[in-house]
Image (cartoon, rainbow, N blue to C red; front, side, top):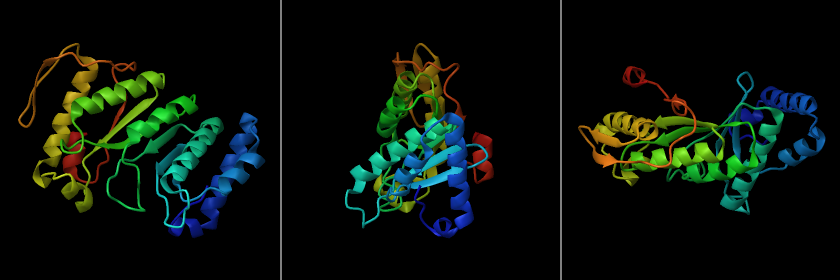
Length: 239
């Protein structure tokens, strides 16, 4: 697994990742030597590996020197995720970012995860996170997309939600900075209602939805687990 930034020079960290991979490959009877040789040749897919909770985190990030660019980096990411699934990793997390060239090219995680769902069997498929201010994503569409993913993955979706804090993204989608927290709160309520209630109706301060039946429904009960990144007291209260 090729790492970028300061961590790429932390040989002890890299060594521990490969040691974990070899140990888990041995436990699962996979061809660790062949797979690790292939993984070491991969390009600039940025991967974080939490060795205690067995989380794999992707933010698709092709470098300028990578000849096959975005197509290649997605193929590499899928291969890594398949390998992580065979090694027994618990989660794969995928970000949603826009306009952040070379930092993250993961602008459609719901589409990417459709491919992941069909190439893995056990690993939990985790959004980390979907951007919920209304200008980024309409909450009904997000609910529908997550429900479909939950169905085709046989109930493996974990749903992280957030609002973004970068000027590139917020200004690029004409997001009102002052409304983001309230929009995320209302969007979350709408999404959960869409998953759990036969007829969705919502009368919020910022969004109003007439009675509609949202289909399909998720298969996890009561719904996919929810996650929220928190760096401020207001976020703790929302969580």
